[in-house]
Structures are given as structure tokens and as C-alpha cells.
Amino acid sequence: MPADIPRPYSDDADLRDDAIILRRIRPDWVRWEETGPTGQWPRITSQAFQDYSEAMAARLGCPAPAMSVGLLAVLEAAGKDVIELLIGYAGYGVASLTVAKVRELGQGIVPWPTDSEPWHALVFVRGGGIRAVGTRSKLAEAATWRIRTQKPT
Image (cartoon, rainbow, N blue to C red):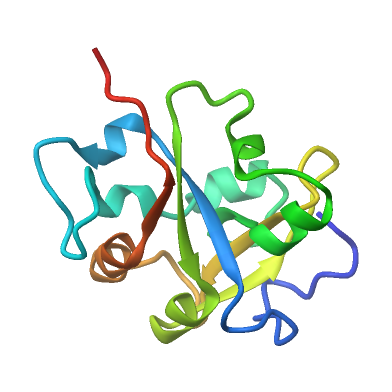
């Protein structure tokens, strides 16, 4: 865990509301036969926006449940493209959301850089705990594809 991050988490006010976050989407987290409410096809399910469990978060060095995302601005500042998020994640896609949408739904975001992904960040429930299914559904509805996942054959 980066030493300068408050525990458990604190929403980073330096991240502007118009900043874009990126989320890897597994192929089994979509409904190929459905279109999302904003016309996105295939529809991204709420499963794509679940938190690490407390046990998994602890194994990864996180002080509480959270969801892993990437910060587009940091990725681009490193001279990388969105496709970089898919290295080692065959078949996955990438969806995006604004920081404003995340905050509107009671979530916070904090940069959480790693050696391999300096653009890495965490989205967490500002009141603590695990993200509710209803909030996950709203995140899924608001997400837009950057790179569609590959349909399983």
C-alpha cells in the first residue's frame, strides 16, 4: 500500500469530477443478448462493479473493500493507451465512467498506484462497507464501452 494514502480511504478532492475512470470488464460480466439503458451493447451487468471482499482487500494490501479502476489522465500522461489495461487480461474489455457519476452514487476514489500500473486507483463506498447491488447497477448503467469485451465462443 502506498505510504501517503489515508486509511481506510479518503476521497481525493484533487480528482476533478470530469476525470474519467476505467474498469476492466470480464466477458462473463456482460449480457450479449441485451442492450443497456443508454444503448450500450452488450449490456454491462452490476457484477462488473463489485468490490473486493474484506479478505481479498487485505491480501492485496488494501485497508477495506474497494473496486480497482484506472485513471485515464494518468494512463495518458504515461504515454499509454487504454489497451494497456488489457495486457494479461485476454478477452476482457474496458468501460469508462466519470468521477462525478461515481461520487453522485456515494462513492469515493483514491489513487492507488502500483509498480506495474501507476494509473491504478480504488473506488470505495464513502460510508464504508461493500457496494450495494443497486449502486452497482447504476454504475453499470452509466458505464460506456471504450473497448468491448470479446464474446465467448
